[in-house]
Amino acid sequence: MDRRSFLKGAGFAAAAWATGHSEAYEAGPRTPSNSFTFAFFTDIHLEPELEAPKGMRMAVDLMNRSGADFAICGGDHIFNGLDANRDRVLEQYNLYTSLEKELRLPVRHVLGNHDVAGLHAASGMSESDPVYGKALFEKTFNTPTHYAFKHKGVQFIVLDSIFIDGRNWRPQIDAAQVAWLKKTLETAPGMPTIVITHVPLATSMASYAPGSNSPSYAPVANSDEVIPLLQQHNVLAVLQGHTHIEEGVRHCGIQYITGGAVCGRWWQGMQYGNREGVTFVTVGGGKLTTNYVPTGFIAVES
Image (cartoon, rainbow, N blue to C red):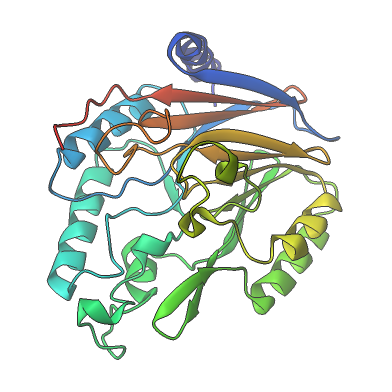
């Protein structure tokens, strides 16, 4: 990022303090001096209804003005791929991709449970359909469901937390992926690392209000297998989605940051007091700083 862009981003972050939430966390050793900011936006649940396209455009405009280097979408790009019929799933994916083209930042993608096409029998979709399951996500975004990349001396590891079991799913990191994660961490010893998962590895969601202890908000089932791996390396933070709340849980020096939701409560207001928004993450100077910035979207009457 050049000096002008960085100052622009820094000014944006300062302005965000008034409307959002900002915290600084001490990073581990060897944090690069070359600061950068990226946007983490998650749980769009895009559909044609409830002015959802307007809400996504507001998030896109926020990110375009941020001076961020790139963006990561934390999953659940569309409203519901699990139960919808084939035409409806394709309609939602096409709507999402058309709006993402307005975002003037490179984008990385994380698989969410609602991005899985036709999984439930109610969809009427055949398992032999070429867009069934995770295939449409992989084809649309030209990406595997778990992968790693590096940016300015920081390693990013994207996990697939959606385990398919027949025509259902559960939040779990499969055994082959756990082995891959271990190897990936070991091949970059000491490198500052940020992990991204749709379903949280750690969350206090069940504590917040009546209904927040729903099984639908449960964290990754084998978090107790994954988290100890992360603690052996220089993992600065884990970015998470799925619960539609803005939250930070700190454990053994790792911050587990849940990034709110672009759609709030599925485009019908606030989710347990959390507005529609985007998280901006800045890495550098020995710290990882997050700013959760509301988009300003106002839900239609539901």
